[in-house]
Length: 556
Image (cartoon, rainbow, N blue to C red; front, top):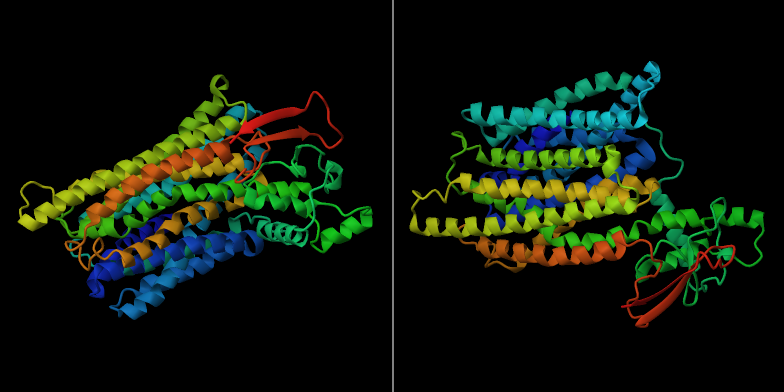
């Protein structure tokens, strides 16, 4: 199933731009908009199905729904269709492709359970650190094995097939998806079913916002004892201006979430339990868990330029390849090979980063002693990835400038109008994806509490999907850049703008990551329009201990 999803991603979804242009006889702008709508919907569905599977159904049931949608879309696309029918098909295609993330999570969970059972049966007394290192490398290797098989299948079909049409690719995708799903069902008796939580994280967030809004007019307490600590330690609070706040720090817009844990005067134990049951009171631990998500959502604005570049991957990059001379294969299947090069570069980069990270943690000499070190590594990884995004944009700019010159002069001997010229920008984009998206996952796990880690895929899709939808207004509002055909467009200007945007947002990322994601030891909120100099005192809930007082003056 994982192999089939990889095949569908490269051989079907990646060529939709070219398919819309050829089959529907529409112009490039409309085809780009439809393709980005499909990509944006796919990211949105990843968020929806991951939340539903986590809270209600589990992975297995949602994978079934997504696979059925993918089979139906691939089968219906084998016949020529009007453009109106295409609008209906992209909904089911987006739902189908969203199952890939769920399947990878399900596959990883099964591997972990099998290894855990093997250790339990063997009663291994091997060093726990050595065993943990070996197990994680083994799991990661098994996770990447289906991708390698998928790449081999794509290469075989791209170079061996003589007269391949879009309908052949779609028909084969439907047959492969149906066949592998039958195998998936046969193996269901051997699967380990994951336990569903008593309460979903999404409902927890809803409870805290509801309770905080109900107490929005209350003042912050002057003592930590006025918070509902329940069974947790009364620590990590700070005195800030008008009252005591809870750590970790968050931007000013969300610091009122602390009010969800404020106690009423003279509340009895029975009254507290009743308020908690009626969703009018939350514990300090629950509030902290949700607050750990807030800085990460602020940080997602720094990836806007990167997400715009990703939106060009399946649209204008593909349009470039379809309008250039095919030199990689003899069957005009260069687009699939270019996408394969990009995906392979991304997966290889992620695997190398994983091995380096595991090696550093494995050897005691280089091991990180705290979570800050892991955040530093993730921030550096994302930074290098965004630099690669800048390089990719500039490469695409130069290739498009050369292609426009060649197209005007109708000269092809210099090779600049060949698809081979696109290999560097696709490879660099793949490296950028491997660094940035892998780094986002590491930073998310390093900053957000473990109970909220189920949101990691949803967060990454939110970052990526925003650019795929935001590029649509650009296409509509700047017709001089995005013409009806590639030769009437000025994509070189667009790619240059992407390079400048990614450079600017790299600086924004550096600011936000160090302001909110890296420096998580100081309890001050976002000062915004506060006084220029702010004094604050961190204290424990049992009183102020002179040894634990931290008095800091920060000038903003």
